[in-house]
Image (cartoon, rainbow, N blue to C red; front, side, top):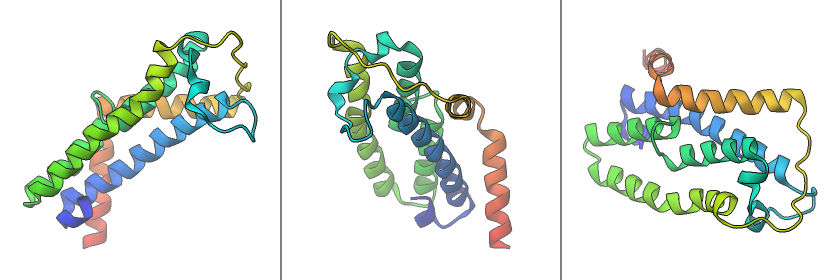
Amino acid sequence: MGIVSGNVAGGQAVLFYLLVYALMNLGAFGVVMLLAHKEDDGYDIGNFKGIGFRYPVLGGLLTLFLVSLAGIPPTAGFIGKFYLFGAAVKNGYVGLAVLGVLNSAVSIYYYLRPVVYMYMLPAPAEVPVPRPPRTAFSLALCICAAAVLVLGIAPRSVLAFAERSILSLLM
């Protein structure tokens, strides 16, 4: 949508959302890696049952990343989608923006389904212990989580940097 809009606001939105999307996915997949039982074990959604109460930090982190991917405020995912849809509407692509909003609404089901499993379904009798994260891995998850929250509340500096980057490409 941002590229189709063909202006600075669209490019700014694309750069911002690329950063935010990378942070959200790195964080979410990082938590999923920690919760995987074995490397050859499939990532079955049933493995998330009760994880939110057994391992509240991992459950909270995964919830934050999934809520942001769904585009729910006050996360960076919401701000990114807001600017993308706004750029499309400003340039007359209202239908495209409506389609994007509808797709986001549908995606909420898929993004929040693991959260339901983590907090609303009872854990099996024996829940495997997550892999112990290395210090660098834990730091990376914390940085991703902090960035998702901070960019959802105060995105101005990163948006300004994205705008300067787009302007430098256009001139």
